[in-house]
Amino acid sequence: MSPKALEAGADVAHVEKHDDNLKKNVFVSEAADEQTAHYATGPPVEIDEATNKRLFWKINRRILVIQLVTYFCQSLDKGTLNFASIMGIKKDAHLVGQQYSWLGTILYIGILCGEYPMNVLLQKFPLAKVLSINVFIWGVIVACSAASTNFAALMAVRFLLGFFESCVQPAMMLLTSMWYTRDEQSLLSSLWYCMSGVQLMVGGILAFGVSHFTDGPIKNWQLLFLVLGLATCAWSFVIGIYLPDSPMTAKCYSEDEKRLMIERVRQNETGIQNRQYKKYQIIEAFKDPFVWCCVLLITVANLVIGGLGVFSNLVIREFGFSLLQTQLLNIAQGAWQIIVMIGSAQACQKSGQTCLMMILWCIPAIAGTIVILIVKPNASNSGGMLIAFYCTQFILAQGNMIISLITRNIAGQTKKGITMTMVFIGWSVGNLIAPQIFQEKNAPRYLPSFLVHIVVYGVYIGLVVVTRLVLMARNRRKEAEATEITHDLAFQDLTDVENPNFRYVY
Image 1: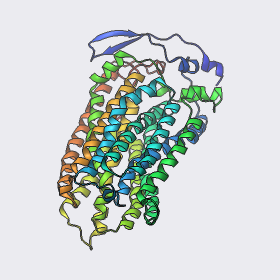
Image 2: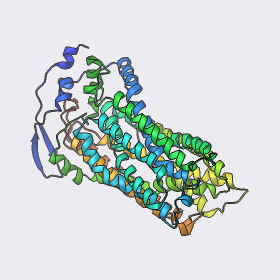
Image 3: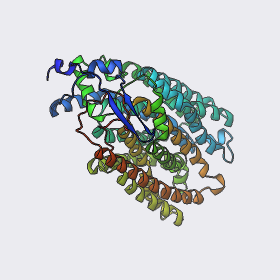
Image 4: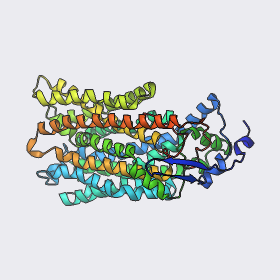
């Protein structure tokens, strides 16, 4: 495979765009992003399996490591409130009634406010620099949370934390679609979602240790915030130094490696980078039924996920476990979450049926919720109740399966950015409503809350079915109009709808 073959020039094709939504035919003559075109202009080149494997693991050592640790930091910093909930923060900050629930809600109001500006920044400016700066700022905010000893101060820091953390999911999605093939994306996106399980394990150990700190000048929960905030600040410098902004600007790889890394993702048909904001792609995103299906899916799923994340320790402790036992049980819960996440990704990858796996993964969650509703906890059944609660954790895998659907089925850089904004607004809305489903008047068992969860599962499964039908219909239409798939348009920044070579996976 010669570098000259990779660099061979090719005229930009004029592609007729059949857009049923816009009700008109137009001709697209958009050049690929200048940096991308430098490496990708020319006919597709086949990469042998050994070279592809070598490049895959070389990318993992840098990109995947950054993704995993960054998502871990976000999950841990965001979840610190859950650990602090049984360490005395409610008493020390004089929280009453629904105030604790509002601390869970305000975080996602901050994320909601930050989602659009962060997506614009990520498209307009170097990704690694935007991510690094935001991570540093939220690390400072977490550390400052240690000084927040009343409801108003905690609300302020939680809002700011959400605002600056809002860049993480869009950045992770961009990195995944930029560096990995569609076959790889499902498993890899589940791996960075697994960090929510790792944070429970590591956070549980840290919280267990810090819980023994009872005679110092500050409270144990304050020490937890301080330590985690400073650690996050330190990690932000690693991101700024170690993470490349894109395959085209990665100084850590040779020119030949960069060409091959870009060639690997040609078959995705989703592009890599384009800093132009295209109005027609914005319109297409807002008119696309699949995009709205994804928005509704992520919103509805997080009506359950968000509540379980904020209230899990309070619920588990009511099964009859002590403070220290509950902190340690986070380790088991985190390990179980990792198994659930990886299991869902493997099932999707091997079966090629993401939507069907999404429905299947709801069944244990529904069963666990029913047990919590009908069985009253006592000393003899605490282990069984804990298992039932762990079954509800199957719902957590829905997040990475939805993200996998989006990264593999949305093309066009502007459309992708708008879709991510819409989806994470939905994610924020679901998460900000979720804690309010748990009303203090229903403590300690929160039976009405879990009853609402049962209804939510039914709505969610219906939405998954609709999403699958939408994508099946699109593929049938594309096949009916099909010509030979050549991947020669992969870097022309076409949307999934207008690119005749694009096929949906579901």
